[in-house]
Image 1 (cartoon, rainbow over the protein chains, first blue to last red):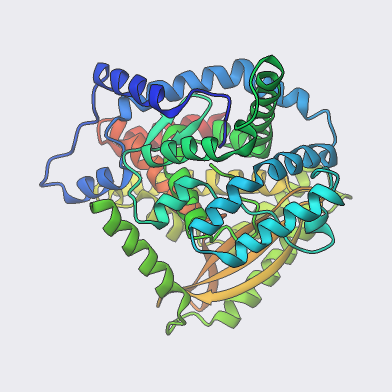
Image 2 (cartoon, rainbow over the protein chains, first blue to last red):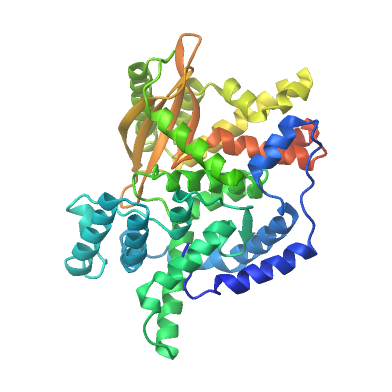
Length: 254
Length: 200
């Protein structure tokens, strides 16, 4: 997910490094238990104790702040919320376009560019997703984490970061690059610019939270271990996004 | 870098999966089966003459008939199936069926006004076929839902659901395994958690 107004990756990496050394690591099962070892490696979560405590922090923030705001946001009818999504998608277009091209996907890049032209003009800045509704070109996402993956860069260990959610070092770097590549972050400074970009960041968090609203509720209600379920679900969904198997084009960046 | 190799493997697997393979389950048959089951499910979900509980019950009935619950359950317990005692296996399968059907029926129940369309259907392995569908909610977003279908005793049965690339049985297996490991490697710990949830 893109949070341009949040901290930059370097302090995040530093803070993570400090906190990781303060918490323990997951215990590797004995080599004799090969199935357990295989699973340990598939989970790819050596910092599990740290990640679980971060997940607990996230769950507390979500229950106290994010979910109540999301519930209030749901007073707005679906078409209005769709427009919010669509405007945010339109703003994100240059970043998606960059990654489409870096991944060597001229067709998808063409889709992205065409969508931007149509939705910015006829769609009034993306309020109406005319590109999809009239021209049948649905939105799709790409980010630099995915681009790095197509370059063959490994994801590194699983990380859970409050509010940002499940991620890994590669995708954190990708997030930083995408933030730097967003043209809106190039211009101006001062209070008005900060407020606007803060509003965009906040709206992005809310929009993503809203997309996953039922899924999050289901997970918290039905899962015997929401953390473990989220860890594997995120990795699977990410693999699908990297391989562009999320072909309906509705999959979110995270 | 080991990550690179893993990714390359995943890519190769993905490519291999696109190539048609000889299949025990006939893809046309699997597709027809999902079309029928899907139509039944959509009809039940969108039946406004029923109240929510009755709709959910109807969805549950269709699922019990179409899903091979035991195969899914054994897959989900994975390597712990062998260490479980026969009594534990039995109780596990009972609790698993209850939770799977209830959770799925609840989830499907949220999709009022849903439409579904068949996507391209591909044969995946020697044992099963993957039927892809696109699910659309009114005014909402569309998503990919793939149904893994295996031939069980001469009947096509659903053995997995894959939403936007996330497999239900893989996710569930990882979750249960985590519960068992955090419970000292005891299957009993999972059963306790499942019992507690069933009682809720």
